[in-house]
Length: 254
Image 1 (spheres, rainbow, N blue to C red):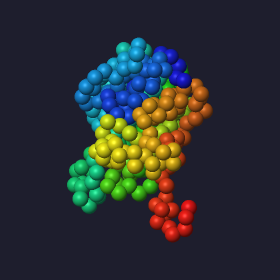
Image 2 (image 1 turned 30 degrees about the horizontal axis):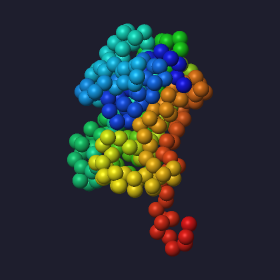
Image 3 (image 1 turned 90 degrees about the vertical axis):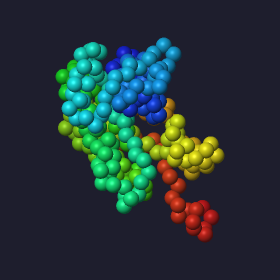
Image 4 (image 1 turned 45 degrees about the horizontal axis):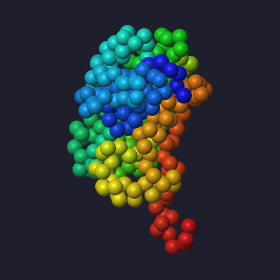
């Protein structure tokens, strides 16, 4: 588990996967700041521990240094940054305006760069250094129809994390959690009703979608001393991956 009292920042931590990550750190005894453009509808909390909300548009490169400097000043430093903020609407490449593609890349690749640079300036001056965790996606490891710019950005994010891990060692460890299909409060927008969600889950070797808590546990591990020699790595959290379509199409029984 993470050390009690660690100071953790989770971007996009007010809902969905981000809130799940924040809750697992809270349960481990960490102090957590969640940031987003708007406050959460309800506090992000577990019994006995509540995350602090601070507003931040992660796409604003100039706002990031001020935000992380203020958090560090108020809390005595920053031990962990989880770059979770991201996402994309469905849209085929040829049917999506260039301006929308630009915003998708900015949110999913440039924003984590901005926040990481700002956090690094705090972490590199700390005796204990720090940890940065990127939230990636299997969309960055395979063709991603309907989310091409997102997949390209996530592929770039994984490469960026590896470069940071080399340039910023030994003070800061940087890793990526590569997410597969994950259940959140907006899953119905992608998979339909509960029957649809269950059907999609059955395509995963482990038989279900990931839960936000699963992602949180992976982040807590990577931030802990148990992962002290893990840097520049990608942890694939996809329940065994995706069954190749040709197996179901082939006439041979697999």
